[in-house]
Length: 354
Image (cartoon, rainbow, N blue to C red):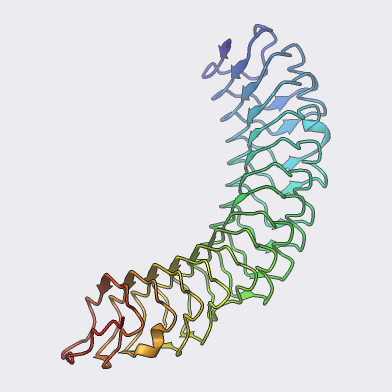
């Protein structure tokens, strides 16, 4: 492999004397502002092109023409505002595309249509205030997409249509306020979705019904006050609902999550857990409830948790544990109760059942 390193040279334009047999080309940390039409056309063997940390704001039509073998392209840390199809045409073999830390506010419809082999797409730290319907059509092979830190407030119905692969999707650290029943449509094979650190308050009833293959869902650090409906998440193994505004866990709140092994509810305002709240979670190993407002512990709270190994109830306001308060937890090995208001315990407070 032949590598050309043209980084840190104060270049203001793409050089015309790069050895034409170069495979990987580094032009990072320069002052390039424009990528001109066919500026790389004399480099047919290039498989990796790295243009991060320049000042690129203009990408002319056919700027990457001739790079038919290109599999990796980094434009991280530039000043790109719009993604236009014609500018990126000709790179159908692309596998990795990094557009982190630009000023992108608009993706032209069908922009990714000719990038069917793209596996990893990074678009965090841009200016995408919303995701339009069909924004990612064509990315059927994508397994990693990050859109965090965009200031995004809205996800249109069908925004993820075409993302058919076993995807890990990061939408964290945005300002998304609600999800409709079609917001996550198109993600039928998605494995992991991170929606933590948004402003989610409203999650419609069938929002997750499209996500039968999802393994992990992160909804922590939002404004959710009611436990959402998780119907359809038949393969979910880890659910994060920590640091929201949940006060009540109703009966059978998680009954659709039969494969779940890890549940995070810490840092809410939970003061009441209804009898049978955790029914259906027969495989759950770990339950975090620390940092809530629980005052009393009763055995019916834990119905259905036959496999639970760890239960964290620290930093609540617990003053009473009823006799048999931990019944239904025959496999419990670790119980956290520190930093509560307990003063007395009955003899059978810690009867864990058989």
